Length: 215
Image (cartoon, rainbow, N blue to C red; front, side):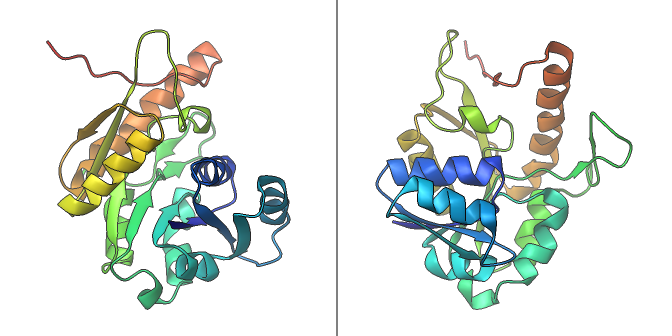
């Protein structure tokens, strides 16, 4: 499979390397084709890795992963010709974090809307699934915890797209995947990220994850 990653931060580079590890080809996209972080990542990751603009990555990928800052999502999507996203699975890993009042951050949208819904509206022909937004990048691939396998919560409007994401998560080592329904459930998943962040600030650690216990 060919994967286009939109974003060159820790999440984008981590997920890109994970897809390459599993045998996929990955193009890391940035605003500029000459982005130094993307170029360094591609050189380090090997022959299955390449880099270009956001539009280049979207054209390349059968699967698209959005891993920019949440505040940049609209601009990033608008920089991509609509036909390059049409019908494609678009995994939204982002959160609408608001750092305007310092740290820890709040959310710049919530309750009646969400970042996930905004992504789906910005790319109406894509099949958007919210995923990987409730855990740190170090645990996104092959998570191992003493207390057992953590849960990944996902949501989206396209049932087949969620099945595809579930299989991707299984390949990534996530044995526990919970579907929370339509993309509007991002209204609840995104605040869950703040719970994750608050715990990190209190404890000084960033490797924790959530577990849904069933009786």
